[in-house]
Length: 74
Image 1 (cartoon, rainbow, N blue to C red):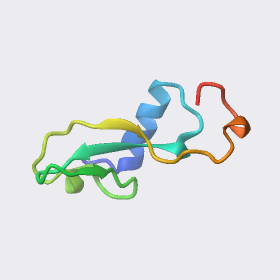
Image 2: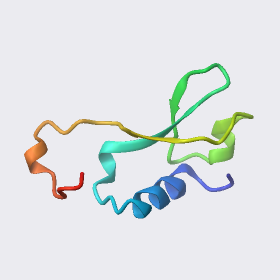
Image 3: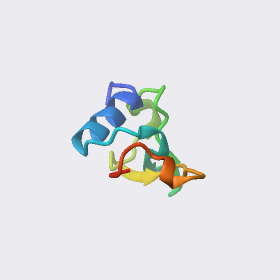
Image 4: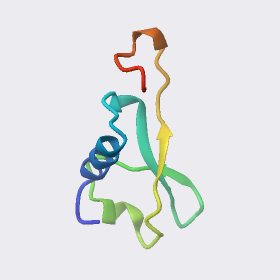
């Protein structure tokens, strides 16, 4: 929780062997029941503000031309 979001996100991407990280991100549900994107430049703890630390791996951007993706797994 003391790490910045980028460290957590990088660990997740490494775990699933994802190289094209720009299209995805981590979300969490805040205490007002809103889905929020984890900010990679801020500390995880400061973003959670008392909510459970359950994160969801989600698509953030869709590439305009999927055939141009470098990795098949993406």
